[in-house]
Length: 219
Image (cartoon, rainbow, N blue to C red; front, top):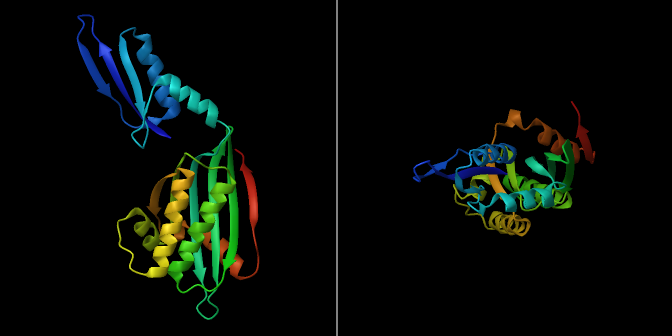
């Protein structure tokens, strides 16, 4: 979660000035808030998250307490590989997140059959990624989605139209799941060379090697 601060300061001559911060991490926002409060001239202090939801310091501390055991700082990679002759899709997903002050990496892959195109394979990989996030207990969080399928990410963000009926069904299903999990999505198309981990997992799935692992990242 990223936050912006709105601070109303009262001068010695009882003038009121409202100041706004740039977007900062929760930890930085709370530290800055404490510095503001130490001035003794804070009339009002609130926080706004990425959804423009307004929080008081008390509400924010309560939220942090409630969510401290849930996955945070989530970056999720996906890739779909398509075999034209068989109609099979190999799906690869790599998810990085923090939880309880530890860093984790999850890798998952799988195979879907009766796919019609590479774009559909990419949508199926995104769907696998969402289901994996749900299994990890991700909800009410900001998630950065990265993949080299610019079609999928730009259609999900609404920047590109989608005319294929089968892809629109995937779109509807994915948007419904994102809404159910109350995820705030950030879509970041990346180059294929930046997506090698998910690509390898997709290839392994088509070769018959199924992966499902969770690894704590140390150091």
